[in-house]
Structures are given as C-alpha cells and as structure tokens.
Image (cartoon, rainbow over all chains, first blue to last red; front, side, top):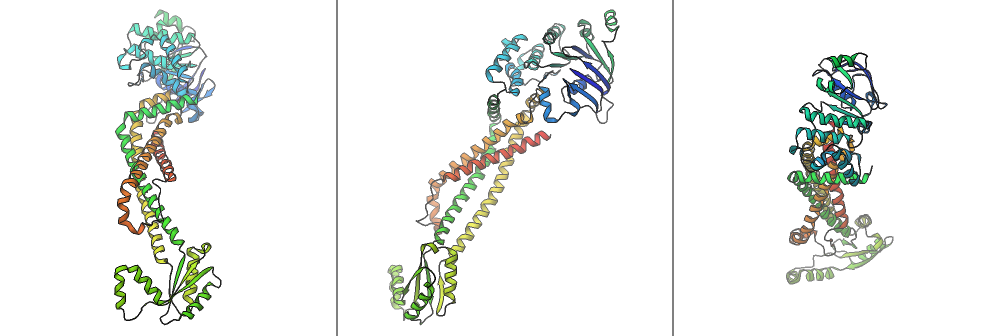
Length: 231
Length: 300
C-alpha cells in the first residue's frame, strides 16, 4: 500500500525533516508512527497525502508515485485517502452532517445517496443524534469522531491520523482508537502518528519510530514486542 | 458520480456566497449595472444616428444652382447632359417658382420678399435620382460631374449634414467605448474584489475540500457561477434602467436634441438584440472578474 525509498525532505533554511527514510506498509496494516515532537511524523503524513513532495526519493501510494505526480492528479489520489487532523479542521458554520457530507459533495455523490451514507457513518461513530449540531456544541471527543466520520465516509483505502487522541482524556482516547481499529478491521490501511507511549503499549500494532527525520526503529524487527512488554 | 449532483452543489454554494456577503456583492452588481447602462444608452443613440444617416444616404434629390443670368434653355441643356447616363429625372426650377416656394415656406414672414428690388434666386435644376442609385457615393459622383459643367454655380445634396452626423456618431461611439471601458474595468475590479473577499472568507472550506480530493475546477466553479450571476443581475438592472429611461425620460430629452429627431426614425422601446447583448456582456464581465479572482487565489 505504502512504499518509501530513500526519502528526504528538506525545507529551505532548516535541517532535513526526513532523512533517507525507507519503509513498506502492506494493505490492511495498522501502523503507529511515533517519535518526539519535530521527529518528522507530520511531514511523513503530509508526503502520504500529497500536501508536500519529497525533496529526494520515491513515495508510492497504492502503486502511484507521489514524487512525479502532476498537480491535476493529486485530487484523484486524495480521494483514496482519509485524513484525521490533530486540529480537526471542521467548518464552524456547518452542521455535523454538512461537515461529513463535504467529502461526498466533492465526489459528486447524489443527494439521496449522500444522506444515506452520512447517516450510516454517523451512526457508526455514535453521532447520528448530533447530526444537526454545530461543531462548537460538541465535546473534543465528539469533534474528533466527526473528523473520523468525514475521513471514512467514502471508504478510503488508506486512513491517516495525525495525533488523533492528542487532546483527549483516556476514555475518549479509547473510543477513538476503537473507531480506527474498526476501520482497519474492515480492510482500511491505518497509519496513526502519536507520541503517546501508553497507546503503543495498549495496542500491539506495528510501530515505526522516527527521530530527527530518520527511521530509527521498526517493530517488525524481532525482539521489539518483548521489549515493549517488559517495559 | 453524478455531474448533476455537483451542479446542484455549485449553485447551492454560489447562493450561500451571496447570502454571506450581500452588500459586497451588491456593490459589484450596481457598478456593473451602471457600466452596462452606459453601453445600452450609447448603443441606442448610435442606433438612432445610424438610422438618420441611412435616411440621409437615401436622399432622392440633388439641386444644381446655375450662374446668375443663365437661361431656361441652358438649364435644359445641362439637365440633358446630367441625365444622359445617370438614371434621374430633371426638373427646371425658374427663379420665380423658387421665390414662390420660399414665400410659402416662410409663411407670414414671406411678405418681406415683396420688398426685394429684384429676384435674387438663380435658376436651378432638381434632379430626382432613381431608387437604385440613392446612395452617398453615386450622389457625390453626380454632384462632381455637375460642378464640372459650365454654367453651374453650386450643387447641394446635404453632404455637409450627413458628414457632420457621421462625425457625431463616430464621436459618440468612441466616447461610449471609453466610458464603457472605464466603467467596465471598475465593475470588474469591484466584482473581483467581492469574490476575493468571498474566497478569503471560505478559505478553510476550500482547504478542506482540497484535502478530501476536490479538483481546482470544483473549487472554482461556485465562484465563477457567483460572478456570472452578478453580471446577469447587473445586466437585468441596466436593461430595466434603459427601459425606464426610454419610457419616462427620453420623450423629455428628445426635444433638446431636435437635430436627432425625424418622424421617419422610430426606435423600439428596447431592442431585443440590445437586451441580449447586455445580458451576454454582463455575464462575460462577471465571469472574467471571477476568473481573475479565483486565478489569483489559486496562485496564492
């Protein structure tokens, strides 16, 4: 699903945000991307949803090379990817329903089908009863669930989540993680960027650790799981 | 994936755009309406001048004045020379007939002519040109042929007034074009500014749309529709203003420009072609302005 070959990303006047990163994530995998602040997690996610282009190296998403992608081809790729942002990016003047429907509006889904799909996904994330509320009237956890619903409503192949539980208490964190795991169980590849060690310990999933832009650890390597278990 | 659904979405978004900033859009619409009103008015005046010019071009008569002392037989001789190879009928007007006509035209004032020591009017020829040759070029060539004949003092076929009218039409056309260019440019700037504000107000929505896979065309379409609608409403206002002007003000203004009045020239209240032209021009200006606004935003 995702392949990175010797990827570098350098922002002018700054040290490399990513340095020689190579990795492979298979279809249907659930992967945690971890590391301290400034390690390059968000930059890596941005490369995956084409918000940035690599300075060097190749990024392949579902067989499509992001590095050589024309500007006009980016929307097509993004329609296969759902993104959950740390800052939610919800429209304050739109209802929960309208925020989620935005994804389907872009795809030109007819109104009847759009309504049906949005109701279905809102039911899945437990927010059907709040579909007419504005984001300001929701709790942090509910807002995050709206964002997940918006990212999931068109059944993307890949779901990227940037610190989806960063501002939530443990109970809400659990709710959100359950939703992401449920999406993964239905076949969606999920990549979650987090710096929360409890989350990594609680969910025994593959971990990719970045430090100063370099991939320093891949839990697929033997012995990692036991190290996590002991402490 | 239905393009109908997208179309519905675009119109809905455009309508929401109007509702979000009605006054900004209204200023754009009014500026467009003013510039299009100028276009329509200029077009109407020029149309009337053109109709008057066409009448002038269709003048039927050329008057040839002979030198003082010329005789009727000389006049017949000149008439024969002019009508030999030009399809026209000639009539000799003696000084006495000319004086009688003048007296009739002057009405009560005609009595003063009785005090004249002698008839000052020369003998003249009235050439009535056949319908096929009633155009300015043929009349001009006939006049120059007449001037070249011995015994001819002058020729009149209204050339000066036709040329003055042509010059006036040219000047009004040019002034109208300049006024339209200035007002049109101003209107476009207003519409583009209104749309840029609308785009700026919706930047978060655009950002999210792009993140979930919207193409540039999808993002631009509602703004282009907004621009076209602004142009259309501006054009409708201009057309309404013109209709009101023609109905209420034109009858009062026309006597002030009596030289433009001729019973044979009748303008319709609002020519359908002018109406269609206004609507198309309005839409085009609105579209161009919105295109400039979204293009600038896309670059940013």
